[in-house]
Length: 288
Ligand code: HEM
Image (tube, rainbow, N blue to C red):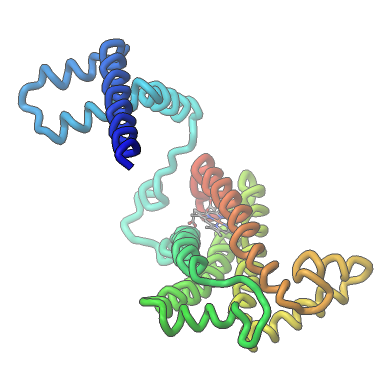
């Protein structure tokens, strides 16, 4: 016991000396001491500014933050990207056109997605995706979230209602894009990515609807698996892929969970990033 005590202290002391030595050496060799000199030469600096600049220069010597920052600034100005004035600025309009709020719908879809990711992550901590029994462990975990987990029912309600908001706002965003003619050249690709996002949003909703494994979920699963099974030639394979077999079993809910919390989030997040990057590069379309 005593030996362990001394070994532990020796180890801690060794680490402290090692860290101190490394820091001292690196401070001496620091290629960018200008920042630190600037910190020292400006007398009136407070503790927090000094601490910030010290941390910044420490990070900068390791991760070359300034170089990457300047490089990205250069790339930004070199791209000659369109920096669109707002419609009102461009045409010197004195009134706000009644459809301007509709340009927020893409942003509302994005915000809904962020809220869904956050609340879904909390639900995923307590949800049990599968298992046999009566009631099933899945259903029991839903009861736990609704009845016992502090704020559990609120988190679930926010997740539930934000889903409705997202489906509605994505659909209305699509209508706005259509009726303002924003799908035309050069934005065809973003329209197609949008079509995929619309479809995936619905699949997100469907897969989530099955997760509570209550009678509503079971009814929806019956419809889904019958649809899948009745597809010509490949029906059995589609049912196995999506529902974990050609009939409903506890595996179905595990499969839906995996689709809902892993496959769809990865694809949708990637598509949203590409979608927003394209909007950033092309700017917002003028109404035609
Ligand atoms: C998860 C779903 C979606 C998100 C988060 C999203 C987000 C956005 C955002 C923030 C914008 C900027 C302009 C605005 O807010 O109106 C935008 C523009 C655009 N979106 Fe989406 N969108 C989604 C789905 C869709 C769908 C379903 C379509 C069409 C099928 C679509 C097609 C477009 C097009 C073509 C633009 C460019 C519009 C313009 O330049 O005026 N998006 N999107």
